[in-house]
Length: 349
Image (cartoon, one colour):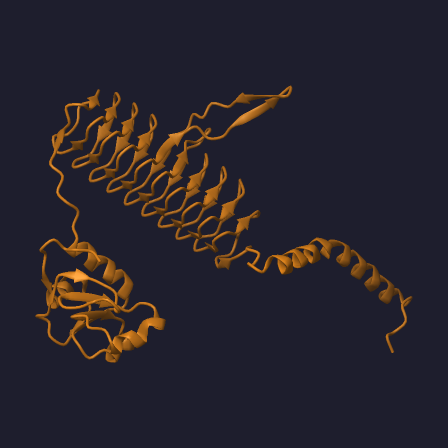
């Protein structure tokens, strides 16, 4: 479980920051967050999933975060708030602030641009010409920031992030190790059996409060820019191809692949390992289930799934064979319908 490293808040102090109502002893001391099953003294738990409600009767948590609907299901100190899961996340952040990073430039860094005194540049970092960093930016070991890049105030790049020339990253971004921002998109024109590379002249533009996971790649645009909207959260090992536009506050889970020129509306959710074919658009508020393959645009928000369910292999093979026969069966059915309409097929009676 997370350890606060000495920070202690009372339940009343937490409520003062988050809102919500305190029931029970507001002076209850909270040092850590934990699950209902494991929490003990000075630990706060939360109930967000109804299937864990029975654990309220046995938990030894010092306090619990829960919604008004189940406020009476726990008799100990509690914080009653509309969104317990979000409240838990904020409490965890209060009790586990990131360690302070002293400003300064490591002697082994290669820096070709003037930087604010408040930034922190780790060992082996390379920063090119005409780079603009905002106040308090932290760039950890081994990162490469090419010419003409902009990174907004308060952003954090973990070790070995690469940001190609001209890309722009907003404020308070978090980019994890191994991510590559602005590599060339996959653009080649066929010519007499060979492939001619198409110069990728756009950049990547990332909004404020975006988090990008480890080893994720966001390709630069071929002509127009690739754009990641404010507040997007992108998991590890995601591929976002050139000219995509990801709407604000969208979420993309691990190993998803998004082909070129796809547009996601605001507040979309793409599940893990989902695949989106190129030149599609998804309506705002669309959810694509994990493992799905999207081959056409989605015009109405909702939850969409194309995953073929897991089954024992022989049964799966039998079902797959039936699926392959569906076009022929549809043709036969259409022919029978025509015969019925023409009156050439006798009634079953």
